[in-house]
Amino acid sequence: MALGLGVVIALIAIEGAGTIATLLSRAGWILLLLIPLQIWPLFLDVLGWRMLILARVRLPVLFLIATIRQAVNRLLPVANIGGEIVGIRLLTQQGVDGTAATASVFVELVLALVAQYLFVALGVVCLIERTDDARVTHALVFGLAACLPPLALMIMILRRGQVFHRIEHMAERLFGRWLDSQRGLDHGARLDAKIRETFASRTRIFGALGWQFAGFVVGCSETWFALRWLGHPVSVADALVLESLTQAAKSLLFMVPAALGVQEAGLIGAGLLLGLGSDVALALSLAKRMREVLFGLPALAAWQWMEGRTALLHIRGRGER
Image (tube, rainbow, N blue to C red):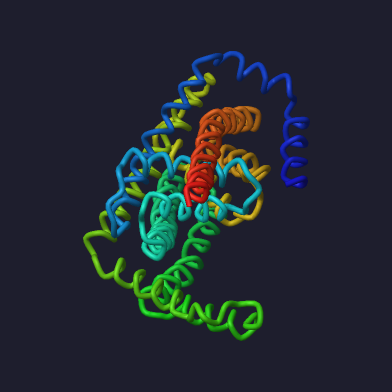
């Protein structure tokens, strides 16, 4: 986190904080419209996630949980996995079986990677049409080709393997003396079975994948509008290139909290290929971060309220006993 923050500060210092501040002030309050704009791609993601949950969950509640998941991953130092753990916990508080909740999140994560892969591939195609730099395009195509086998292998293992059953047995061998032997070792096997059950429905899988991909595409509107308001409009194809390459960089370096430095470097690199100035790319990144903070803080507050309410109900339940 410290290293990423240092990169951000260094990039702003190199480009000139005054220049970037001028760009942002020129756009002014209209950048706040990026906050409600985030609802649409997130809503599409929620529609996809809903198809994978083998239980009934109200759409507004699921949207709130998805908002909290995103806020935890974007604003807290949890290596982009803490939000998923929180999402599983909140789903179980809504009455969803823990195994079904966990399976839905795992499958959704895998499908999000597939959708993102397709989204990045679309961005690379747009970039090939836009630039004559063969070295860059060849490197990106090679990177896409190299990522495909691991992604396919991961899907195959989850669909047909016994990943969590084996992990559970490994944990029992290593930490058996600290585990409760009376509980049995069937949780991993049930999770494997539930994941296979979810993958077995092609309608659910392809429907969820379609919603996920649509969410990535609609998410480009943030880049398109922000650059337009900053006084440097780009085409829809260019916005797609900027968003897809930045998403790819953030996924590769997922362990960096809030993608500090990664998002900025990704936008600068993609912007240079499209003739976009580094100062504009940094202003765009700061506008995006403003949206993440203002959109995410209420979600974190809602999470704390939900957890506090659950804890209070437990306390009252004990008191009645």
